[in-house]
Figure 1 (tube, rainbow, N blue to C red):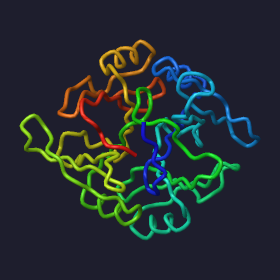
Figure 2 (tube, helix red, strand yellow; figure 1 turned 60 degrees about the vertical axis):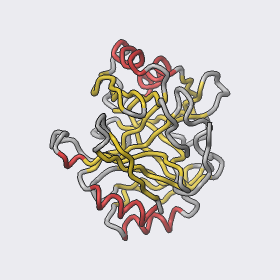
Figure 3 (cartoon, helix red, strand yellow; figure 1 turned 120 degrees about the vertical axis):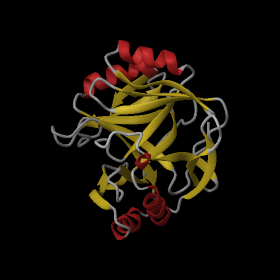
Length: 266
């Protein structure tokens, strides 16, 4: 496992959901996570997911949606050593600040933002809570993928706001398609899919798609359905491994992936 403390790298992910109790049961049964509530006053029903035992490595969080009309969704957070300055760059480069910057108990400071195409993400300045304690191992997050309808503008935005690099790699069975990877300190942590090619229904908005590492995507997809979730994209083999896109019973989408070659690190 590789945990990066590099500014701008992915550092946390949490689920905002319409039914926190049901969501905890679902993810515990699907990935073997164990949830524990944040005991501090003012935590507003937020819980942490950990691998295996109660004192295991933290991998994600879960809490109630801020507005009952808000759909359940996963949100990625990117580390920031100076949240106020990075937040100012979001607004200055065509993005939108949804909430913050604001303190979260003694844990850190956060901002929730949208990029120019509307994809939501968070900025996290760690204090007591440093973020992920496990990544790139089974049942932990391993890849962060932006789906957008304006790839060129997305590259400009994230390079200007977070300083990410990009690189291209062949994609598809014939190797002629190209996939854009995001990098921090020359390490790939995610990628980008341009939805303007027409393969996505027009009602699908720009969004971040978060991947959890699993050993057997087919079995995980089947288990998701048994637990009341849905399979949005059936298990599919790609050059780097095999993946599936799933949704929990409350409708929050996420992906699972088994890499057959190293995915990079963050």
